[in-house]
Image (cartoon, rainbow, N blue to C red):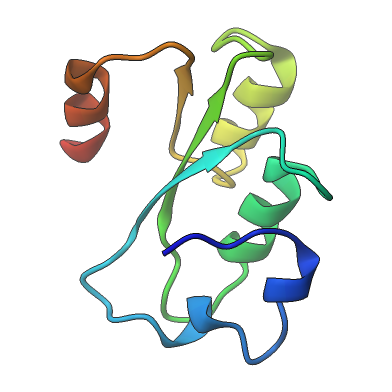
Length: 95
């Protein structure tokens, strides 16, 4: 499922109604109308669903203080720097 921007993140959002077995999200840090970390913060507040969110970016790096803090606070589970490989994705899936 692809979701873009605040227009899709309403109280009736499809994120709240997705099947429980779909709990991994690869989220780009730079979105057209908002920041990916804002979406991740929203997702971390969902009751009962709480997907594992992996932030993807060509601008940030894994040692970026913003990324480290988001991981420590449980907002995201991990980070993938672009470009990334299939092996990198598999590594996230095993977390």
